[in-house]
Length: 199
Image (cartoon, rainbow, N blue to C red; front, side, top):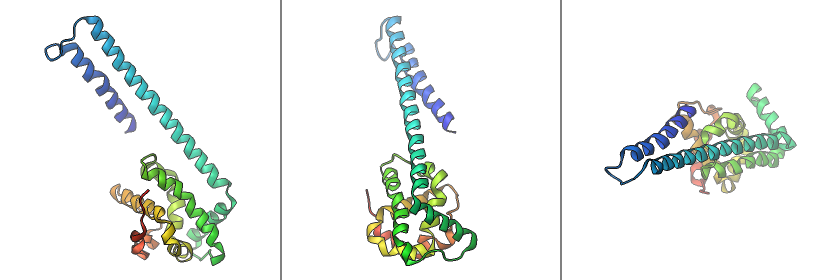
């Protein structure tokens, strides 16, 4: 689908202006074959630059995702919380105590940068859903985490609530299931919306 869109944009960027240059003399007075060829060459150059910028953006995005995964995997506190979230998923037994609050907040804060980048349009829900969905919803929709960390810290994590709200809308729009929906923040604490902050 992505390749088809790129191809369509390329065709429009080359064919439409080229057609106007070749056959648009009645509208704009462009004299001489050399001028027309030069203009078509310039258009092709612009398209080539567009492809180069897009390729560099894709590489930068991929590099950011790899660095993000490394940061997540290398933080021992976050790893410990993640392991408990996996255990909760498998057993449905409570895994957290009040002593975990700081580590839980560290895990949740990991998503602040992502929330900021999504809010600014640098990352999209489509991109982050592919590799962060479990990590995010496992904590945000965990009833123990909601009681111990999320709700008591509502005044400070509005950006996380904004990320959550937009992500759930993305899932609904694309007929995708919200992970751990049985304990969703929307269901358990609908008042979270009062704390959403804009970035």
